[in-house]
Length: 82
Image (cartoon, rainbow, N blue to C red; front, side, top):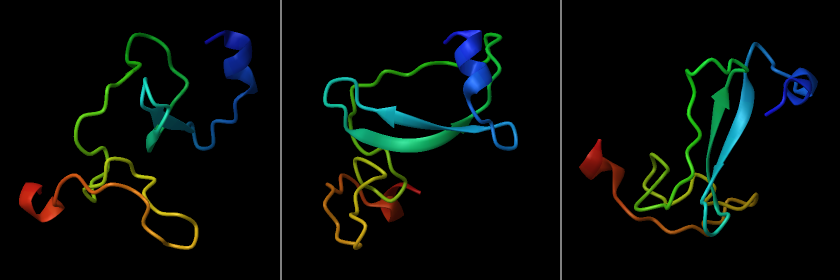
């Protein structure tokens, strides 16, 4: 990422939304927040998804449509894990 691009991003309260995508399928897995520091305290993760990325047990945190209908795959039961 270039300094020019970093300068153009809007870091609300020092953070920006970071979306994690499966490397092979481009499926959106989760959303997180990152700051703009780039002094060896961050890591880029390109993943081959195994299991669930969402704490609710679904493969992806984006398992519902805007109308609430579940379209994702549940891959574990949170009550058995947490």
